[in-house]
Image (cartoon, rainbow, N blue to C red; front, side):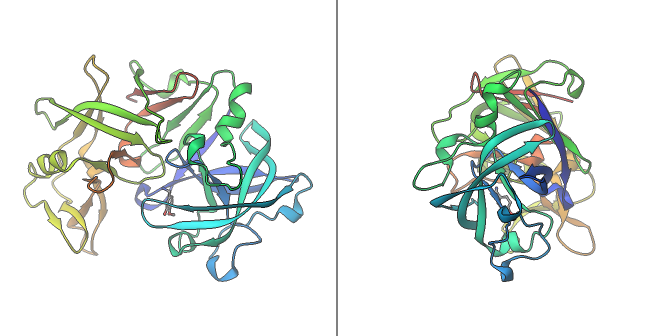
Length: 330
Ligand SMILES: COc1ccc(CN)cc1O
């Protein structure tokens, strides 16, 4: 089997939302597919009313295939401090033509303000490794883990794009979605993430800097978070760029377009190039002269995060069979 669906960007590509069908008859929710976590949770009929602002709600009582896991609960918090918690049902979940008949659907009873204010986001669908799932007393499998045995190939691919819809596909690699070769690298799943190591970077037309950058491929994080040495080297090339403590990040003049940023993949010289305009993440004020940087530091996290700013420059294969990541330009 195979499947897939569109991934539509929200403002500034802060996140990408994908229609997911849940229950019988189907209830379609727009979920944030997140390779950095492993819970499938949704806004629901059980979500505290004061914490719902426009989201579509999954109502298990309207699904003939919903089964409550009595006594099961979940509670999750994300790197940005947001959180949610609730109870657990099993139900049928589909992404395009791919269906999992008994998927754990975690219904939110509480969500933090970040989720309440994100009115188009109806929940998250985690595609990290199973060890990160928060369901108690027994952890539940991700949609990918449940689907994998039936997939033509044990993979899913992320083809996110700047400002326009891209796609998540399951079970196959679309040869028309990328250019050149796919370079595969090893993954360390010991922390539950798609954790890999880039050999270094280049700024604009500059020479390649060999420096080990270990980090995770995370569709659920907006920016590219890198070691401070790399970040200061990049912004050091841009007149007017500076660390702004009130914005808690580097800001830069939106014009002229900043230099491209490339990160290495594998030991044969392959690289993914971010066009400089991707680093103009969003204007910081109404004048539009200053932009918040799409590359920021990873201090305090313990690893780099290749979030949407990086991923949207690539076609990425998440290979659950070999536990490798494949990177290609497009
Ligand atoms: C809407 O806000 C969020 C979306 C996705 C994640 C997971 N990385 C955390 C959030 O706070």
